[in-house]
Each structure stands twice: as structure tokens, then as C-alpha cells.
Image (cartoon, rainbow, N blue to C red; front, side, top):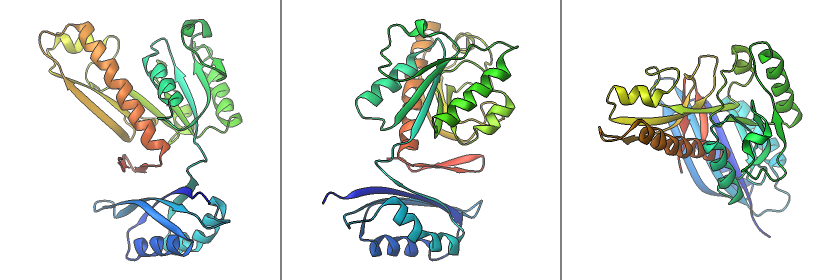
Length: 287
């Protein structure tokens, strides 16, 4: 019998005995721990843990594991989740004319690097803008946004999220600012990527603004979306050096590469249950 693989993630107020209780339970259920990571946040007094394990015992399902684990979770006051690795996360991708992140995610999904179900692609531009991209059978939703239609289109977006049972919305360089209402409703369920100049160089052509100031480092940041624009818990970041010899177009090119890499890494961490929100920050158990 082939083993079934599971992820267990949890967070709680730190206290003795949590690791012992978790490992004992997995052992008693016939499980074999393949990877275990934990973090004790001394500032918040919160404890975080991720365990990847397999079970070969017949009848051990995610539902059975959850039922047996519930008394332990209640005893320690855990916020927790047990998920079968084969129960793929359901993702909705949003994009605008800049399609480099969208294309990159689709490629990584096709080759199996990002194990997920893509429920759909949403854009404020029509399908014709992406005529060179093979969306296969992924549903495409055109939701054009104007000041007069913004609220209505956001309601349509929320309906799509609900109808498709979306676990995570990915803003793959979606160039529309989400309203506070939408950001609040998607809190913890939406990841954005942008250049790391913020709060400097806001607005149009940030790489050109950075070039004019002689910036020597450029970067990209992937984070959870909150009502505080671009200030949600950070998941992943990266930087690269630039020089006086780099043109604004060079900075844009290098920035695109960083955005692709940072967003795909952040999404991969999420898909493997490696990201836990910790207030204004996050705990990332990187692979």
C-alpha cells in the first residue's frame, strides 16, 4: 500500500508538551514524520509548527486524523489544520497587461512545480490581450474596472471566489488597487507582489524614479493583502544589485525577473503549508 502524505500546521500560546503530544499522536496513528519545523516567538509568546508525515495504515484519512487530533487541539488551544497533500489548494490568479508573472506561474504549474488547482484567471483587460498565452481549459473572467464599476466588479470577484471555493487569490501584477472592503474580505486569502522601493518611488514608473536617484539595489516583495496598502505580512523578498551603467529599461528587466521569482516562491511556500501569519508578520518554514 502506498503511503498517504499529510501536512499538519498549528499555532498557539507556547506551553510545554506540544511537540510531545503531536509526535506521539502521529506515531499512534501509524504515521512517519518526514519533516518537522517549529518556531517559538519570544515576543508574542506564540508557538508555530509544521509537520510533514506519511501514513501507510489503512483507513487513515485527513478526516480521521482531524477527528483524533481535536482533543489535543482543544487541550492546548491550537489553531491548526491537517491536510492531505493530494488535496490541492484552489487558486485564482488576477493579472493586468503586465503578464510576466502570470505566464511564469502557468509554466511552473504545467511542469508540476506548483501543485495547485487554478480555478480561473481574472483580468481587467479582455482575453484578446493574452492571445499568445495558452490558458488551456482555465476559465477566464474579464472584469473591467472604472471608478463607476469598481464596487460592482469587486462583488463579482467575491462571487467567483465563493463559487469556485478559492483558497487563495494571487495578484500577479494586477494593476488595480483593491478597496478596503475587498481587502478585508480577502484578508489572509490574497497574495500580492510589487517592487520593494515602497514607500519611496510611488506611482508611475518606479524603476525610472529609482534610476534617477542612482539606486544601487532593487528588489521585489510578496506579501498578504490587507486594508493597509502594500503593508500586509511579508512572505518572501529578494534583491539584486544595479549600477550606474544600468538604464531604466535594465532596471525594469531585472525587476521583472525578481517579481517572477519572489511570487512563485511565496506561492510555493503557501501551497506546501509553509506560511503561518503571525500578526503583522509571518512565519515561513522554507524548504
